[in-house]
Length: 188
Image 1: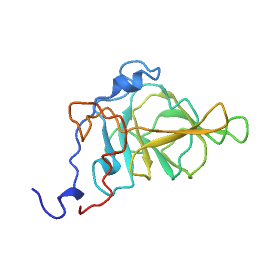
Image 2: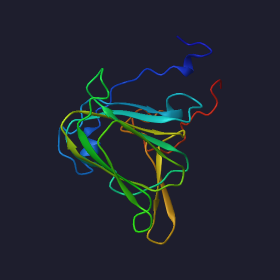
Image 3: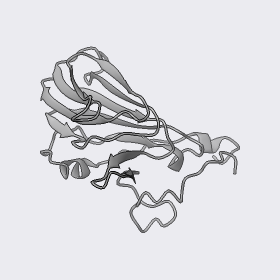
Image 4: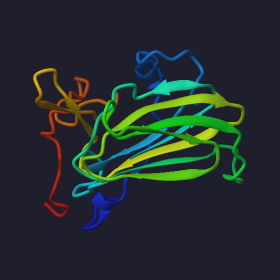
C-alpha cells in the first residue's frame, strides 16, 4: 500500500550476519540466526533510532574496542527464553569509561538495561558464560549506527555501519554506509 503514512511502517526482514560477527573472533553458533535489526532513517525516513534484536546462545567477546557515540545508547540484557525474559542464567562483563582513566567493569548476571550517555566510552562487552539464551539489544538514538574511535594521533574517527544489506541507491552493490540514502523528510 502506498499512502501518506506508508513510509512510517517497516516490515522486518531476517538478517543472517553471523559471518560478520564471526570475523570479530567468535565461533560458529554463538548467536541464534536469523536476527532482526531496525537501521534508522535508511528504513523509516526521519528515524533517529537504531536497534538490533539478537539472541546469544554461547559465550562471545563483542565490541572489543572502546568507543563512544554523540548520542545516548541503551544496552539491554534479558533472558532469551520467551515468554519469561527474567529467566536469566549468564554472566556478561561490560566496561564503561575510558580504559586507563576512569573505566569500570560491570558484571551483569540479572536482566538489566544500561544507559550509556552521549560521549561516554564503553566496551568491550564479553558474554563470558551463557547457560541460557540472552536476548540482547543495543539501541542507539541516531539516524544511522556509528561509533567514534580515538586515533593514534589524538584525533577521532567515526565509522558508520548499516549492516550486511544491499545499497538502496544501487541494489547491485553492498551498502557502504555512505549515508546518501538517509531520508530525513518523512513526507518527501
